[in-house]
Amino acid sequence: MVNRSCIIRLSRYRNALIRLKALNFVKVFSENLADAARVTAVQVRKDFSLFGICGNRRGGYLIDELIAQTSAILGKDKVQKFIVVGIGNIGRALLNYPGFRRSEIEIVAGFDVNPAKCDKEALIPILPFEEMGDFVAQNGITFGIISVPDSAAQEVLERMLEAGIKGILNFAPICLKEPKDHVVRNLNLETELENIIYFANFAEQTERE
Amino acid sequence: MVNRSCIIRLSRYRNALIRLKALNFVKVFSENLADAARVTAVQVRKDFSLFGICGNRRGGYLIDELIAQTSAILGKDKVQKFIVVGIGNIGRALLNYPGFRRSEIEIVAGFDVNPAKCDKEALIPILPFEEMGDFVAQNGITFGIISVPDSAAQEVLERMLEAGIKGILNFAPICLKEPKDHVVRNLNLETELENIIYFANFAEQTERE
DNA sequence: CGTTTGATGTGAAATTTTTCACATAAATGG
DNA sequence: CCATTTATGTGAAAAATTTCACATCAAACG
Image (cartoon, rainbow over all chains, first blue to last red):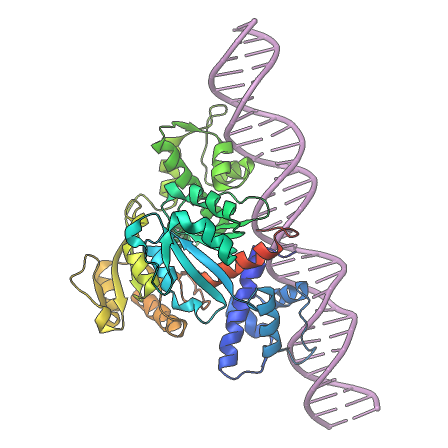
């Protein structure tokens, strides 16, 4: 069964494949991908088997084929449009994040309640939050990122859902509810750091993830 | 056994508790925390049992006690110092992230190879990367965040380890190896978005996480 | 061409994680 | 002060995930 960690791994395999291709590699073995994604070779093959990805019984996998197949699964075969709500530190960093340029992820607009932060003429326009619903409808946006303070997050989520957004990444430090037929992934920076702090303190005697 | 997801949940419980306390709540039930962290009530109690946290057989848990206990586990009883290497979009956002101010997480310095980005006089100084080793040693830094391009990440990791850093959050889009007795958590924004894209497309027929 | 070699693919076993079922204790109320 | 109610705490069962073991196939080589 395809679960979250499985897709995370697939994404890692793909990243590794792109790096290997840049180094002119043509074939790759499950062992190599396992190293790159910090898992076991069997895990790689099990994951592939789950998606019906096949290799050559002795020759491993062809990198080009693998990239094509993982890309299709991960939706990299077309541009995926995102909006960002909340143009604070994180929001602005996402608008300018160079990592998205080479991927098929495109942030098409930002939104904020503060008129001082708006700028309709910018390369990626920053618009008043009230206009979000119309913008999403007119431009067929499917995905959104929430980077507002926790007190506003639930309200923003609801407005996004009303507007028709299907998948959301939430940076606000509050665990938002995932409604039926929608995807909400909560990513809390403080939580991530707390995790590191905990395991760095107890790393010696405890296992992890 | 305490694993990564377990600590993530603990962190979420604590966030919820702080919000509840701000609303003048004094007691809380496992059911409430379960709602806040999007898990089941049994899971909350199992987690607590794992850490030896006890409630009152009928009266639930006292919020103040719970906050104290979870805080101690998560290392919130003292300031945890971090450095950030790579002052690009993400790095700068982290330096200014207001969410850390109210927590016990303190980013004490940034580092970059580009002299134009350095500023020793800033509130949080940005120093040349060569000075990182000495800074870490002199200031007893335990934690670091990597927000450099993928090609530099492995090198930065190794320098951090040499300097004595024990826990690292890596934003570079490459899966870094976690050495013995150290914690390296890889957080790739594109991967997170790919996850959302996948499950939003197939959400109807597939389960998640 | 037959044999050996080496990597994939996958049922079965082992392990991990979550859920269930219920014993237990504290508060409430007659 | 006994019965009832209600939430915790936890062994046992169930479910999910990972690892193992090995059959299978294709290439390489004699």
